[in-house]
Image (cartoon, rainbow, N blue to C red; front, side, top):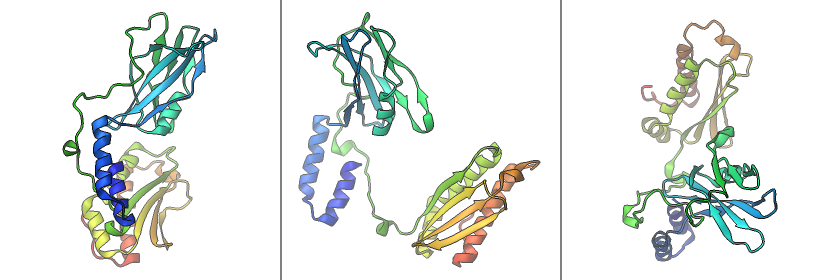
Length: 275
């Protein structure tokens, strides 16, 4: 993906495409990948230092191992088994902050630290039972080396090439929102980002459409604004209106239908695809 973005940027900047291709091939052949070592922590007896070592692999997820060194001569004495980590450098940093010494021989961390406080697993290393010697390099999930020919094709486009788009931004708050309403709303809005809808919008509209929903309002309705080269529409549904509602899923459908009708009236576009 990074190579595809560099190639697309290079076309506009006049970069040497052959040099980019050579660099890409070298990175694959050498097994180069993103690595990051987190902050170290000293053991309670001040004899050892532990740090997490992260690597981002080709499946899109990270792997982490705990490395322990002796403080006096900086020699690695133990490395944990690898554990699955999150897929971003921010996730690596969140996981690294959980590194703790339980006692002078035992250290652990939470390997998976995702979004919105999602944390999973526990990776531990006990110096009394260090296991087999190994290097602090989380192994890749596959042994077969990658090649340029084996990689999926990635196409990078700039906004001018894509044309106007429909994007569901989101909204809230979700407290007190029935699960049936939330699921139906998500399903319907996901369809609006599918290819038939994007083709319809790009063919007739001139600006992007951003879709929001707001449940903290006091009045039900559809808001539409056009400013700064984009359309913004918001489904307004007070959370109080769900009290006693017999079919929340039907309300979600009605709200999305009302939003689409309002957009068509305002933009004067042709009939949209079936929802």
